[in-house]
Length: 113
Length: 113
Image 1 (cartoon, rainbow over the protein chains, first blue to last red):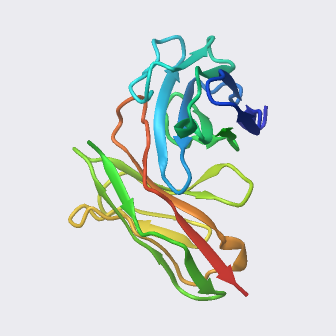
Image 2: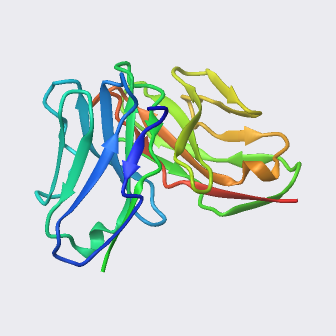
């Protein structure tokens, strides 16, 4: 597509429930990144996918967080047993293999109540 | 580890005023430096970048110079417009994790007519 698409744009969930966030990268972009932006704070790196290589999960805050990507297509970020501190905007970005010039999606705003 | 510090906002200016948003960084080696902008309701967009010391990135009237001696990358614009109202993020990449970005906390700019 023309840009990076994320869904849903907003998600309200009860504490303890699992949520799944989706990212559709730009066609042909081999690199895909997930970031988290808590209210009033900068972006925190979560995970990075490059083609079919093993993902870099060094930014995932706990084992409740996981992400998958099949090839160079859609990625899903799953948060299990959500906690209130998981409330944030989750941003996805994709780029060509060189890495510079990310294109970000508009994000999913997650609110855990 | 890497870190980026930028001035807290909001920054409120009148149209045609001069803008400076300070950004300093801590990193090993020689990172690349970026400014991203997030307009209301939109995703993050790359505004400008510089990949080595003394480089000046520029776009849409904005510019920033990579100052290795002061580890800074301050964003400037000579005459702001109402349409420049947005949140501005300073970021760096040291080439690790597929050029993963480390972001500052963001600075909200509000330009009044």
